[in-house]
Length: 216
Image (tube, rainbow, N blue to C red):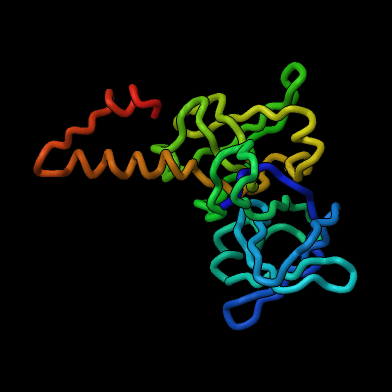
């Protein structure tokens, strides 16, 4: 699990695919201390397994062909900038929201523009994510925990404070670039249970009002 709080950005040095699997090599901008073989690191919000730290400090990850096809890691150019976050440890502060590192889909950036002292990022909303996005809810964009400001039928927007834009890879994104999206895992489970309730033969005692009163 991750929090969506980016620790460093990194530059893609190489990407190779052979027999359905691949190797992704990333050079982190900041040193990530005490790295261990086999630990999980989110790269643009994608949970990957660290295979080794190379002599020059670059990080080598094993990647499945499915991962490269379904996320922007297979499309980002060599030299492109990605976000990096190590897995959450018990006892750490949860400053963002619970991020699984299992990307739902990719979607293109519509715009990134300044609004007052902040920046507004607008992204096309895939149909499959519509049930899980609500205003003031959470979403992970390229692994960054962000709060939804506006949600329409075909797009959503989030606001970025200057430090978020400066310290993450989002400042390099432009119109048409694909970003990785992961819906809030809690919202996904709530939606699943509600759909089960609607189709169940025996009415459930759990209601929308009960969930709302309980803080959901």
